[in-house]
Amino acid sequence: MKLYKFRTLANIDYTLDILLNEQLHCAPYDKLNDPFEGLFLSVMHIGGPLNSALMNFAPLGGHRTVKTPQTISELPIPGGTRVCSLSGSKSDVRLWSHYAGGHAGIAIEVDLEADTECLYEVDYVNQLREFSYSLLTAPESTEILKIKSVHWEYEEEYRLISKEEFFSVSGKITGVYLGLRTSDHMKEMLLRVIGEAFPIYSTKLNEQKIEIELNKQIN
Image (cartoon, rainbow, N blue to C red; front, side, top):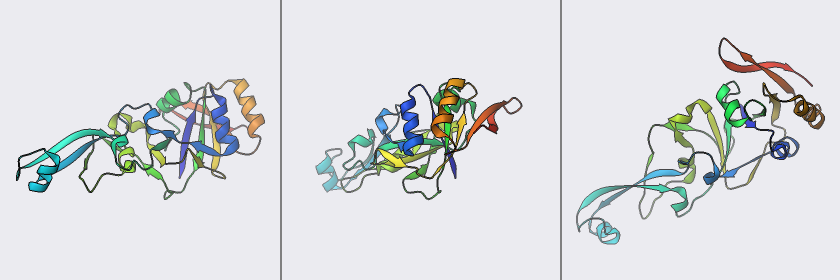
């Protein structure tokens, strides 16, 4: 499965780390650009004398459901809370605009197996997802972090969710796509650094579909 990591070339050392060391950086979830990351509705069903006495939510014998916004940092065992975002598309103009320096950056193509451990397809929803929470059970952070608002649906996102800071893509980088506005200086630098290790492609605008498409290989 071909997935794409969009990168600006403004901080080229981070981009070169991917290309030369063949690894993807997984950022802490609370450093991502969506303030709703890691947020969910905790649903607690209170009922019976024991629950009521312990939780002090309802009179003895009473029953009620309590829904409370929480973040995964409040979970007893947070689990994997680092995320690397990839896209299933390299053609959407917005992806290049938002994540590749306004089309002056690149998209790095990686070929991952669909069953790769810690790789998840994002599920887009129109409201906060509810998870049952009790004294004995709690949701897994992975289940929360693979959910995003429908506002981001155009990204066609896949996520690496891990405890580790880096995820190896050794032997899995299959191409580098240059943005429409990537400078000649940056093109020459990438050609020298990459050589023939990976194919480098220029891109062009498809005016009929209003999307980005492959032009030709330049190395």
